[in-house]
View (tube, rainbow, N blue to C red):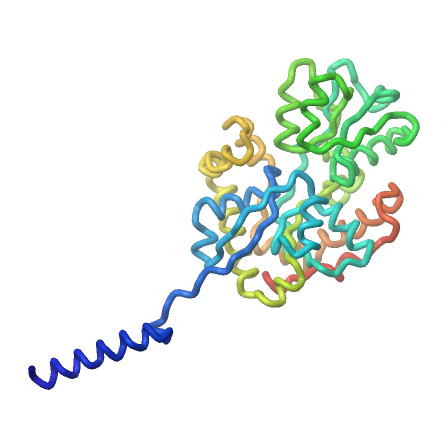
Length: 333
């Protein structure tokens, strides 16, 4: 055996031994970071679902583990308990926790702007808000639909506590209750919104564009935000940034290739292709550049959230108006 061959074999043995002892042989691919994500079939989670299903999360080194919740309040409870690392949520439940002083989470982005995927659905005999007097209305408490309902009733001069009967129902039970005539109207969001709207003799009385702050701030009653547990973000800043990159690429797909995005989402929402496309196309999907305008300068979105907090106090949904900007962290952008 010549000296060159002995040298090659010796090097191979040395490398194999090093590998067996746990030493890196070459630059090994870093293990993906596990992120427990709190989601649902609501459009605020479309970006995360698409990024997971298309491999965008994997591309950025994220192992996204989907956890489904029927309400934002349940999702926020999981965040507070440390069971969810990043979540999308309607902001009302987050504002309620801010009002109580909770510091376990930070708002890191807003993924979209919607206005016509949520509203009050009624029997077609009801022609105006005034005609809701004496009616039973189903809605999920502490949700954006609840805030919308309270606001529009107040605008119309109706007392939500006396003039109507507001019944607290989980979003998943609204369709059944409406079909069984247990309620006269339902305040809902997609996909339940679309399923009730498709029923015979049902009409849309109003949607989020009737909300007081929509006219001045383009603010829905419960705009979508992405948030991270404060501790998770502190310990895994690179993972949160990677997650955000995947989200914005998914938003680009939603904007530029809605048909492709719709096909991916059908398994999540169980909508028809036509309904799914309509939801995607009527929603504005924000870019990373948009985030800085919305959250930093001039920061109109954060200003709108502050106004929303003040409204929630007037509507008796919170007991204190938080300074929302204290919960906004833009370093992950």
